[in-house]
Length: 239
Image (cartoon, rainbow, N blue to C red):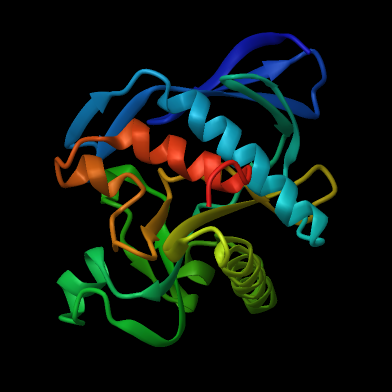
């Protein structure tokens, strides 16, 4: 499958049209951004790692019956996937309090939540991705009805359960993560975007060390090494 015209360039990926109007190619970039693009950098090889990690995790979810846009990994930096209309809701799934949840609500960093929290953010960089409730989603016409919101919540919880079970014996705690959904050509809501340490927080169970983009946010260094370690554990090369 060949790229034709560039459809969109975001912070972490370029999205290309292909010869098949139902399929797109995501080209994973080495760029790093944080704090709504205020902090920027680049790490050679980061894009390839995210592509490989996303590929493996999409396969895990597909095997568990979660509908996704994934088709195949074409090469180190390029993924073929279904073309979808993006639903402009970022779905945040939290198992442990950290980051903005701790800052905004004063919940102790590292506190295990009494239940999994599912939040919605408006996918709008100009507005700073503000928080949404169900009524906001309906007013903005991001979804057709409350049943679609219920389905998105259900699928987010399902992804969380699968990911927690998958990483349970790999020495990594799934702290929180961000998901995106879209509508395929038949109007079905499916999981899209990527599944990587760019949008997942992983903590090493033994040491509590961050194995994700927080290493960049906090200036800790060693981001590529951490991403490589996540991939190795996914592949079972190191437990």
